[in-house]
Image (cartoon, rainbow, N blue to C red):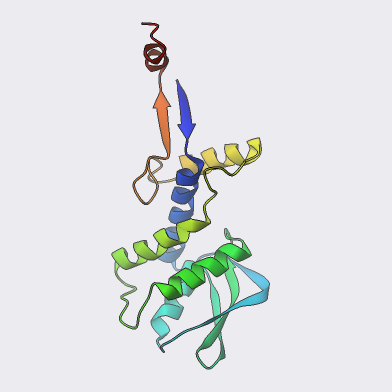
Length: 165
């Protein structure tokens, strides 16, 4: 038996579960960043700020309608943190219900853009870590969008494909 892993779908699943675990725990480990990520907020509400903090960001006011993230979730790199904030801000409105599991899930799914791409070359250590991380997921069989993370092929299936049986 061998397995073909879709590294993008697998990494999306891993990333999604880390983001959701951070949100659900409300106490995500953070890493401070030297240069804050600044962004504008078109409306006033503390709810979006609380939601970002639950995802693992440290947010402070920076000016009128401008805020700065001084910390990002520990499992993200700087560009991933910035993209998540910008995607987050693009996807919310004044009436966004951050208590809704569906809303939070949709936000987390948008963050999956940070996953490695299908054509990205991984070192053997990175590939092994990806598989270890995927094996720790609650739902390792598919990405958050429903695509399979891997396919399994048995010896018998391979022999049939090569017309050996």
